[in-house]
Length: 339
Image (cartoon, rainbow, N blue to C red; front, side, top):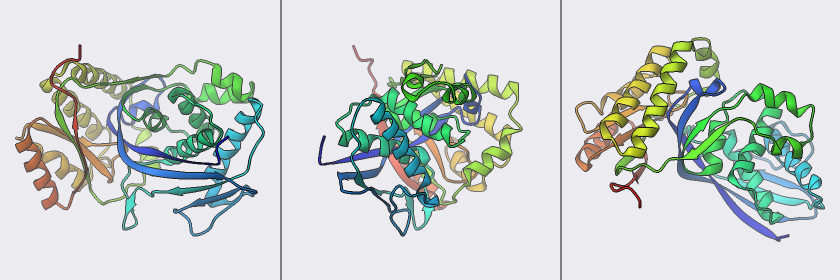
């Protein structure tokens, strides 16, 4: 066992598949964003949990602010005991609020926190949790709390990559939780699919921050009722087309699948595209790039893929003039297939 360890987790943004992925078996494409939350853990005589999100620290005594953190520790402790480890109290400090001036970016999630704690405890106990196991354990924590999300955030944050994610039947797994122990449940096939995507085309991936925080949970509940079979079919078609286009390096197919995915969201609910997100998207028109909202919408961030330097420059300029900040930029993909 180590005396101390330092770990980090990234943020995430959806390229396509939002809302549809809430339905079991539906796919999405999600990108890891290297803006990090860090965890510092060290052995101690008693548990002490500190997060820069709160003014106070906690131990394992129930504390509403620290409930998610405490429940994650409890699940990991159950797992460690099942593997025959002796539990060791520790102090854990979590930093990195993924916000500025009190306004969240919308790239993190409760998932970032859960995975951070699991990684920190695994590092302390010198336990190698692979990406898939990390994903399943984090999903277990959130399912136990009654979370109804797709768990796509967790998949992306656990794999720290651009991923294709097909969601599983969370209700089915939740029912299994009452019937089998943690180790058995983690060993079972939950029916999800996660694979990394390596784009075969060089492009700029740009993130525009609207500085309008969205209350994702409320928005999801509001929009969920509008999800139809035709929306699900359309979304699946565009996500699968986008994966194929990225892998093949087909620029026009990438543009059209993202454009179609965006239109599906616009038709789903007018609440998704705020005025600023509309500007973010429309700024790409006439340029060699494509832009859309990301995630639940209603504010937070939008994304763009740009296929030449001049278009990137013009797009960023148009965003800035509209009060949209370039939060993150990455040169993504490569022009030649890897042999």
